[in-house]
Image (cartoon, rainbow, N blue to C red; front, side, top):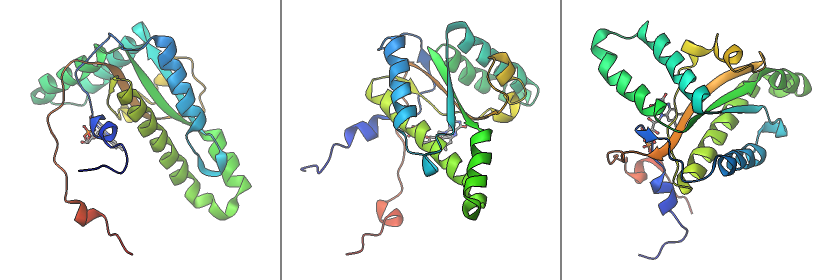
Length: 200
Ligand SMILES: Cc1cc2nc3c(=O)[nH]c(=O)nc-3n(C[C@H](O)[C@H](O)[C@H](O)COP(=O)(O)O)c2cc1C
């Protein structure tokens, strides 16, 4: 069947949990890619409130060690093996992108546009999600595996201090990345007729 637009690259982006640290692109190239995504991803009223920290090497390992220590205080003994496997899979990766929101930008935006003040947090969070996806998809197109994680509550009190980041940055998500150690299982899809109505 003839395809209207290229769709295979959308199929290829998956959650990759078992990583290793041999990146198919250089660290510099990786950083440039993230810079381009942060720069060009659209934001509400062009506020540009998303912030990211890219952790490589020992910083990356320290981050996952901290998550693991915090997790051990909240998980049951039964969960330990599976959770440890997940965290080890991330730790073996090449690095982690931490996503934040600059809370000062949100306050300014609310003051500037009082009419929309109650929607602003939702919109900045949506824009942060768009950036997460943009990076995830772009990495996938460069054969870098990644997944999206949310250990926010476990680390929000320590992470900024640990990496000397501004106190006004609020943690939103974490994306461990690396080369793809094992492919994910196939996933199921709901029928598109349930999800899309085409009206002409
Ligand atoms: C907004 C959002 C939040 C997610 N949070 C997590 C998470 O905290 N931990 C996790 O392992 N996966 C998380 N995922 C990954 C989803 O479970 C995954 O994308 C989904 O099952 C489809 O699989 P795929 O990414 O391989 O296509 C999240 C995905 C999205 C879009």
